[in-house]
Amino acid sequence: MQSFLITAKDKNKASSYISDFLKEKEIYPIDVNQQVYEKAMGIEDVRSIQKKILLKPFRGKTKAIVIQVYENITTEAQNALLKILEEPPANTIIVISIQKKEFLLSTIVSRCKVIELKEKEISLIDEDLLELSNTLNILLNGKIGDKLKVAQDIAKDKDEIVLWLEKISVFVRKKLIENYNDLKYLNLLRLLTVTHTIIKSTNVNQRTALENLFLSFNP
Image (cartoon, rainbow, N blue to C red; front, side, top):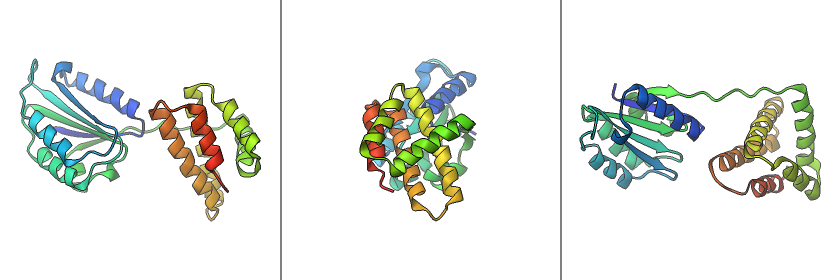
């Protein structure tokens, strides 16, 4: 198998895994062609890869084409990419990284060895449950000033913010399971997911992102 599909929600985790993976395959860094697409990958991007894939390795016997997609791949681009996967050069390993394999055509998935990187499971202790319950109450019933105060208290360290968003997402998901007809929990969970992605993967002002989250939620 020459083609590999890495699925992971965390792009940094995916990048780290791919780096170690290529080292194990004894592929020199100079022989790795990295293509990163922050937005949707289109047909012209695939055509560019088609040209690069014909090049010979510089130093080793094998080269790698790494395709990291964080949004999606257009159907037209996927069909073109499928042709590459069907007949890759013998001296080339292809690595595709995306959040979910469901974003890709089944024909592409079937051509790859799929490696799913699991997310670390978040556990909540009693102290977390009390704090998150109080915060959720403010989000549901608090005044604007109360919500902004919560955003201010949380927005101190990026890693801590990301962890807090992951914890409250778990908490809200449990509430949604208990109250599956209550759309306010579903809407809040969607906002939390979007905010988590923005803060974790960009250099956005973290406090502003949290304030937007709290103020845009209307139960």
